[in-house]
Length: 121
Image (cartoon, rainbow, N blue to C red; front, top):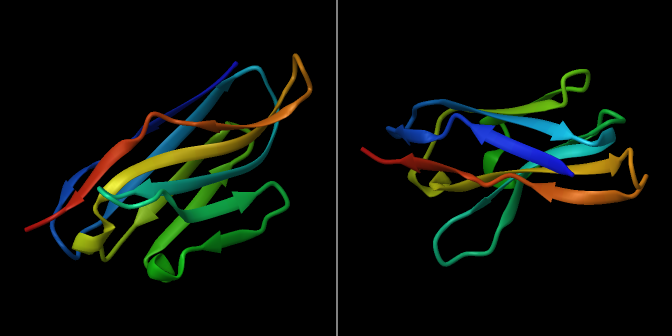
């Protein structure tokens, strides 16, 4: 089994910054990609940022220039640095990882439990 644990959410004023962290653990053979998604009330879950083991990175248009995703492959961690936060960034943020399990050697998608980010004055 693979577990993802996020941390770093909270309440921040517009224009402020937050850093989210995600740690993957368990029966990990390799991680193909890690990313962050978010879901606001009444809306579908959407991709925020994603990075692959080959080094490619993509961002939602709404966060380009404000958010930066990083990953430490040796530690199976990923982070999302969020700056210039806006009220519309308010959502539950989920860490996602595409993991090859060393027991089954199958690749699957895994999700964290989510962390709340609220941007409000």
